[in-house]
Length: 335
Ligand SMILES: NC(=O)C[C@H](N)C(=O)O
Image 1 (cartoon, protein in one colour):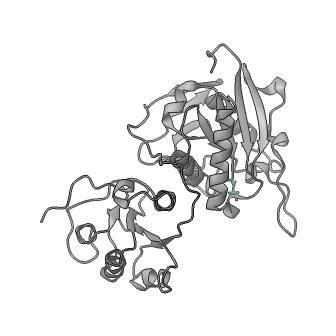
Image 2 (tube, protein in one colour; image 1 turned 90 degrees about the vertical axis):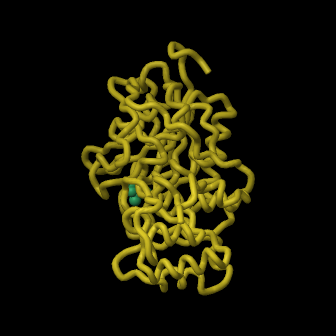
């Protein structure tokens, strides 16, 4: 790894998404390859060279967890080949999940940066080129490595655990509601605002993903049938994640169904459908409350969103990691 004065070699890995999409046709939309996303040498930020590579070429809605494993392997290969940083271009719809999957799977020895675009190359004012440039600048800054994979979008730097797509169409689509961006890019330099969080999300990288994890979204009137449907055939799912109401609540009927599942040995992990805030421990009691669910053996996923907790459970169970290690309980609920 060179000093900031030496040229830094950045792997640019393309996976598809709006940043690379061709104009719509009647069938599937094509994606241009990484060559079209690589800025020509005269347009690159100073002291950056790009090593382009096509890894996948599709909309993010078509990606599978096997694709996430493939991408993590490609990132590992780039790091092993001596890159000073890695940039991944990606569709925005599931970009935050891929960022978190890389936080689970990749040892962040160099900066790993994910970006995309909300306007395709053939729309007016495409945001892809500016996002790629800012991502390259971030990937070339070694001080970003300890943050794990980050999302750089609209010149903001967001950590994988907290970032989420907040807007379906605007170019300023991403935010980290719990803390804000950890930094920003201006004039081809990274300005950091917050330090890296203690600890790591990383899991041992042993087995490719095999576990199937169901997702239940709590809402008014959503009862136990939502969980029962997922598990009606034995062996359909290996675990369930719940996007619960508020600080970790579900309807009493859904709560009872989830408790039945947990008692029968299916891992059940509770998250909140709120984009910000903690899951409570001992404030509310009664059927479907956080006290009821915690005491009944359900696990709680701290500040992770439901889609990210699902990936943690999926990769963690596939690697044979005990549930208590994946989602540790700080202290038991009293009483
Ligand atoms: N802005 C985008 O990239 C959205 C696109 N549908 C995708 O996720 O692939």
